[in-house]
Length: 235
Image (cartoon, rainbow, N blue to C red):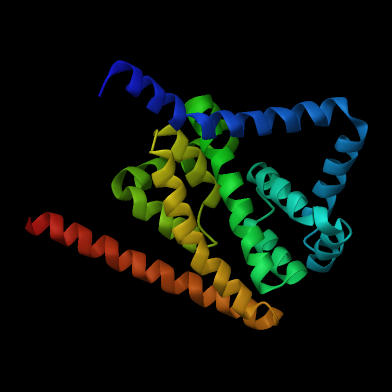
């Protein structure tokens, strides 16, 4: 490969990082310079941290066609709101827009939020990211990702009770290939999204289903870890 081709390939691979950084910069600048944007984020924070799903759904519904954009922004913002689980936004999207469109919106929002998290991890580095997610969490997720790579991302996305946001930051810190990371993210989040869409008509069945789905995915992963360690010992 020539030097020119190598430079072009390197530049092309970095465009998702630059795009994600631009989104973050625009949001931060907008918050501090435009009163209406600041008011929007303050209201979003209040609603999303209320813990009242009906209030969240009502809030999203008022935006009409702009609802998907709002949900995408909320998915990005929740990476910094530890008490707002991403699964709540996924449920809200599907309840507000139906199984098909709601699921597509979720996948798009997760794609954008994960890209932003990856970019932040890659650009800020380990020390600054530790201030966001905590040193203990960063080390734990880093070890997990180093050991299992692609599969670590998939299982983390599949299980709503694992560190979804931390895996994005750490993926960037460890310089995991962007498309490999995003591919694993979409593979892992799709079954969870479909699961929520299928159970979306009943709150009780959804809670029960998510619990059982999480437990099953965790058991499958533990079996995989056990098999992997046994295989390495015998090998």
